[in-house]
Image 1 (cartoon, helix red, strand yellow):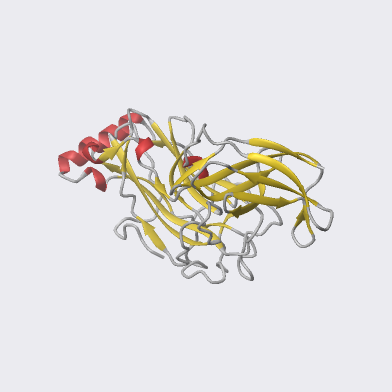
Image 2 (spheres, rainbow, N blue to C red):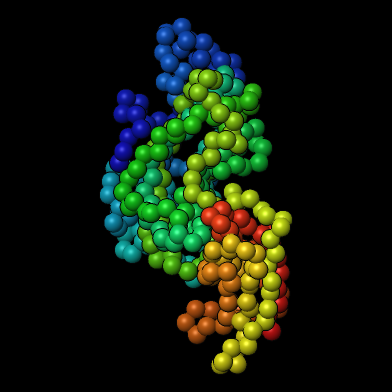
Length: 325
């Protein structure tokens, strides 16, 4: 597997107190070593995780993952998936979602002006250019504030199906924060086309970085065009119609009458906001209430959200509601 820094032994490296963190930075400066050489934290998944994760997250065992090189008896990774050694996938007959906290304790960053995160990943998911599905995210938070997405890939980016090193090109300013936490999240968004291997992550390293290289956390995000990042457009409305089909079943039509709508992605969600079915078409989308080979939408209230491409720009609506009969 790719090694972010072969000169550094794969061990947990934490700064247990603010005083020690500051002392390390002072000593490093005295030795003439670049601040970027100071390793604040490492995770190589060779030890037990404090957080077992939710969903399908787990650490690979000696059998590895079929089709994924360099994981097995002597090297392990965090994997979102199941049936590792036989037919790896994340198809749970519905939405596949899980979170894994990578930092057993908050990382002490009180002695640093900025930091940079690097990691290795292996990813093989659905390919769909019309909207973001099968989202793989790395999220961080400072001083236990809200989680923010630092890195993301989705169905809109081709899967490489090989180990890749993300070098963390953006250094992030600490803004006088004392602690850093890191987690990874996988969200299939819907329950379709999930018989792919999924996402593995390894060799997560946090290094101190010079302040001059740093950017604000809000500017450091790197990834596709995920729904959460697409701006919500207040001037866009979705027209909803109940349509009777030729076989006497019903469907709901979602349409946007704005000029310039090139593509519409509608995600049908349950009342808790979790999306379980998605359809993408042109300026309108027809969602059948039942399908013999896919699903049956029960009568009653449902939620939806829509992502639209208008004159080349992606926009989204807020969460709306509709009823099925």
